[in-house]
Length: 423
Image: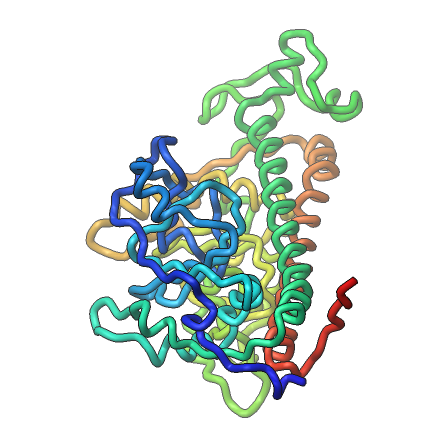
């Protein structure tokens, strides 16, 4: 029974606790990957952005991560953020991380890690932070985190349930990365490089297109304000084919005793959900309500363009909800994303204020509009990619909610799992 589980601490299940390597990262592919605080977000590492670290053999032996090691951030706003290393890439860890090497004779590293994904852990972290300007927690403090420890076989069985959900969420994330890359590659080929037009101009069949779709692309160019563009295509400003609705200052709609909506701010857009968001009442106009699949564009501070899949909410100021009554979602989403780097440069140039763009910049940003038959053919190819992407994100949100519901119940013994009998 759960009441018979022993109570232990991180120190009690660790055979080694070490601070990380004090050295500078390198973008050159020399040495192992160099894991830093900023590389860990919500228990996930995007390895494509992790730099490298030239390191001596002696230091490599000391700071190399082994599969099953836990690393925990010890300073700043990231204090308590953690990651379970599964041996993905040869890696060492930086000085603002602490490594806990789990003693596998008594504890399953995955089970221990899931205890560090609970509300109890974050309450412990909040209570443990010291300092003011750069609050943090040292190894001695973090080692004192206490949790229940069932028999080893049961730990592994509990972890397996949670891992199966996380693995599906990760698979969806990778699928979405592929879908997004495919959609952007098609957009680049058709609207920037004009590959089908150039192929026909050279007397070649456009690669990857069925004959009916290929026939809709012109075989020549015309002059325009943007230079040579495919014959028969039109140039329009972003704000002439899409609507950019700016959000409200939602403190004017305070929550009361009635129904409420989470307020979607830049922070929510960046993390992709509304968990812990401020609330407002539901008296705002319907077009200021955000739904799954809506295109949101943060035009101030941190400029992002995203397909929102974090549930129904209210559109806060500094966010545009992008829609169009004339064009499909994929079209105005990809064109807005295409200009995002340009918008970020404009915002970065505003040194005296928080970086932002103005509506005039939307008018200055141009897009190419193909004839309707070709646009419809493009939609039949790209729209399913965007819809799949949205569906995978919503599925992942459901799976994450299920995992977060099961997590405290499994770790407390309220829900039990079947432990395979030894043979």
